[in-house]
Amino acid sequence: MSDPSLFASPLVRQAARNLRTVEWLSENNTWRFAWFCRRDFWRTRRMMAVTPDEAAAWLPALAFAVSCEKDDDVLAELARQPLPEPLPTEARPWRAALIRSWERQRAATSWGETIRLAALVRLDRRAERLPEWLVEARRAMDLEPKNRHPRLAALAGWRPRPGDGQPHRGKRGVAQAWVRFWEEAYRTPNSELDGLLAAAALLHLAEAGWLPSGPSPERLREEFRQRVQQWPMRSWEDAEILRMLLVSVPADASAPERRRQDIMAWLELTGKDVDWGKREAVWDMLAAWQRESVLERSGRGRLPEPPRLLPDLVRTLEWEQDMDVLQAMAGYVPEAAEVSAYPEAARAVVARWEALSRNDDSQIR
Amino acid sequence: MARWNFLRAGAVTAEEQSRFDADDVEAIGSEDDRDVLLALAQITPPGTFPLAIWTRRLSDQDDRCRLVARLAIHGWLVDMAGGGQSRQVRQVLRRAGQEGADNRPVAPFVNLPPDVLPDFRRLHEIETALAAGQMPSPDAGAGNRAIPRTVPARLPESYPRTGPPGITDRTTGRTAGPEPPARHPFPEVIRHE
Image (cartoon, rainbow over the protein chains, first blue to last red):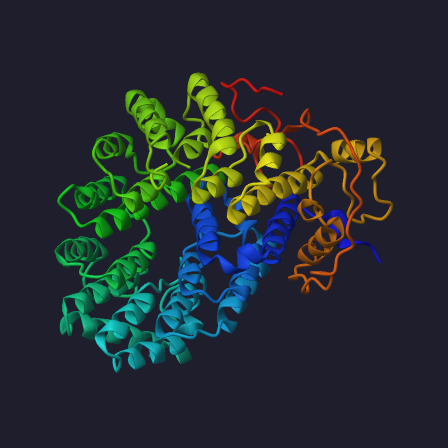
C-alpha cells in the first residue's frame, strides 16, 4: 500500500509540524506546570497575522492542546482561537477532531463548563445541536446570577451557519423554541445584563433571517452596542462575559456604509473615559474583524471592505497605557490599501510600537 | 507582536524592517521577560536564524527562558526539515556524519541538547495520519526516545530561514507548505543571508 504522507499537501505538512511542536512542548515539565506559559503561547498565536491556511494548519495542534488541558484560563484562550471559514476541505476532519476534544473535556468548575459550552457553540453551528443548547439555556435560568450570566453568554453566541434558514419539519419546533427563549429574555430581562445577552442572541438570529417579524438586524446591532455602553462592568467575570460576547459578533456585512458607521460607533467605546475591560474587548473585536477581513479578501474574497482604523490607532496609542488594551491593539493587521490611504498614520503607528517595544515596563514590551 | 504584524502585512519600510531585525536579534540575546521572549520565539522573520544566540539562552538560569529557547530552535529545525530545506539539513547531517539511515533522531549540532532535535519518525507518523484524514494516535514513544549522539559540527548559521510570505500577497497562494514562495514576500527589504 502506498504511504499517504507521500501525497501530503503543504497544508497537511504544516499541520503536522504544528502538532508535533505542541506535542513536543507537552512533554516538557516546565510547560506542563506553567499554565501562564501555555496561555501566553496561544494568546500570541491568536494575535498573529496569519493566512486562512495557516490558521487551519493549527487546528490539529489545537485539538491536541484541548485534549491535554485542565486549566480554565488556558482553556478560555483555546476557545478563542481563530477559525477560518470556509475551511479547506482537508481541514474539515480537524475541526471535527477539535469538536470531539471539547466534547470530551471534563470541566471541574462551573466556569470550565461555561468555556466548554462557548467553544462548542462557536465551533458547531449546525441547527441539529439546538436541542442540546436549549436544554442548557433553560437549565442556566435556574442558576444564580454569577453562574447564569456566563452560561447564557456562552449560549447567546450561537449563530446559524451562513445560508441556513430555519430548519423544517422535525427541528422546526426546537428552532422556534430557541427563538422564543431569547425573545422572552429580551422582553422581560431579569437584569440589565440578561437584556444585553438576549440582544446579542437575537442579533445573530436576525442576521441569519430567523426573525422575520422581529426587530431588524440594524436595530439589534445598534441596541446591542448601546447596551454594552450603558452596562456598568464591575468584576473580572464581567470582563470575561464581554469578551465572550464580542468574540461571537462578526463585522456587519450588510452594506459598507452601515458597517463603517457601526465601527465608528464602537470606536467611541475605546475612549479614555471608558472602562479598560470594554476598551480591551472592543479593540480585540475590531482587530479580529480586520484580521478576518484581510484574510478573507486575500484568501477567498468574501467580505466587502475591511475597517480602516490606522488613524484611530495612532490617536489611541498616544495615551493608552493599559497592558491588556495595548495587547489587544497589537493584534491589528492593516491592509496594504489602508497603508496607502494613510501613509503618515502607518509610519506613526510603527514608530509608536517601536517606542513601546523598548519600554522599561516588560509587560508593555 | 504589533511590529511583526505590520511587517507581515507588508506595511513597513526598508528602514523600519532593518530596525526590527536589529531589535529582534538584540532582544533574543538580552530579554529577561519570559513572556516577551516567548513571543520572540514564535515570530519568524526572514533572514538568518540566530541559532548561536538562542543556543546561549539554553543555559539561562530561568527554566521558562530555557524552554522558550528550546522551542525556538526545535521550531526552526522542524520548519527547515519540513519546509523545503530538508536537503540542506541533510547536508549538514552528512557533513557531521550524523544522517540517520531510517529517520531516527540524530544530533547534528554541537552543544544542542538532544531534546531540541526533531523526532522525524513521529513527525512522519503525524503527517501520515493527517494526510489520511485522521488524527494521529498518541505518541507511544514519548518519554522513551533514543538519545541521539552528539558530535562536534559547525553551527549551521549560514543556513537561512525563509520567513513566511506576506499575508495579503495574493500571488503566493498557500503559504503553509514546503515550497518557497515564488517571489520574496517582503520585496522592499534587504535579506541578510
